[in-house]
Image 1 (cartoon, rainbow, N blue to C red):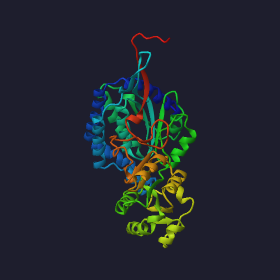
Image 2: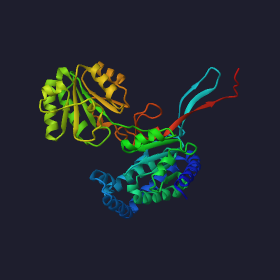
Image 3: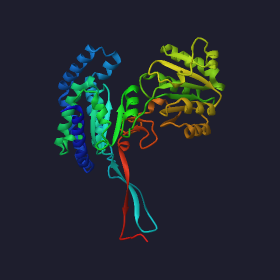
Amino acid sequence: MDTNELMHTLGRQARSASRAMAKADTAAKNQALLLIAAAIRREAAALKAANAQDLDAARANGLDAALLDRLTLSDKAIETMALGLEQIAQLPDPIGEMSNLKYRPSGIQVGQMRVPLGVIGIIYEARPNVTVDAAGLCIKSGNATILRGGSEAIACNRALAALVKEGLQGAGLPADAVQVVETTDRAAVGALISMPEYVDVIVPRGGKGLIERLMRESKIPMIKHLDGICHVYVDDKADLDKALRICNNAKTHRYGTCNTMETLLVAEGIATHALPKLAEIYNAKQVELRGCEKTRAILPGIKAATEEDWRTEYLAPILSIKVVADVDAAIAHINTYGSAHTDSIVTEDYSRALQFMREVDSASVMVNASTRFADGFEYGLGAEIGISNDKLHARGPVGLEGLTSLKYVVFGHGEVRQ
């Protein structure tokens, strides 16, 4: 079977399974999640052996240390996968939930019911845990899914797929509700994003190159974000102690995440007081600073920021800094250079905070909090399948509700339209 034929077979199977998943009851879905969690714990040694195969191949292919770190499946990572499934099982089931019910003058009652999206194609790179997280969220939300993981994790993903199928069958659900693409042929991605007759939504989780390709080529709607160019604006009405804590955490908690601050904006009225204190924090952690002219007048030893710096997601210990006139200038900068991901204001002025929240056009807008909170778990979603900075359907961290849609439901009592 060639790759295109294989993908169409997976698509047909997923479409059929999606109909069974849409009507599956909560107890069956939760049972599947708990059975998969138990199987992961039981087969921990086998999963680590499969992961070792992937790691050996990755080292032989010269993969860098950061990718090897993401690929490694430790005892802690295995337990985290199992715990994640158990947490999803404890979340409320969104499917079938009705809302906005109201009577119309005709006598009919109109509302909305939450329903699954159908078949979700998920394309990701060298993180075996995504296989389990994605499977769990799709099962609980009543969807079928086709998972195309990175070739670097193929042995581990195959082993995990077998455990997911075991759990589904044990709960009386179709084994094809979660299918892992077992070929490493790159043509599989092209086929997956070209099957709108079988796949309803694509969720890419990977680097910028992958997502740019999918944006060009996909025939299927996507839930995605391309860049995480996140900002913190320190207003001249900020509490400086709060600002120092927030700006430190937003940049240095982790450098390689999409919700890490990449540009710091500081109001002119507080810049001479705040920037030296901030620079001291960043210098101690060896963060390279790049600033505008006004910033460099206060911090003369730093590099000059270029126009390109304002548009760059560094994912590294590098930070751009710009001194701005006021909250209006900060909002204008963010809406010009940001990626509509996550932006925060530090201020004690309530009206400025509200203005910032209204006018910044991003998926997550924060007041007096670190951008690092833009995460499904931190938002109380239990888990996330990714983050979206699109405006249609899902926006921000995408949890169970983001993997569903709404349909209108009407209750009548024999009414006919006049």
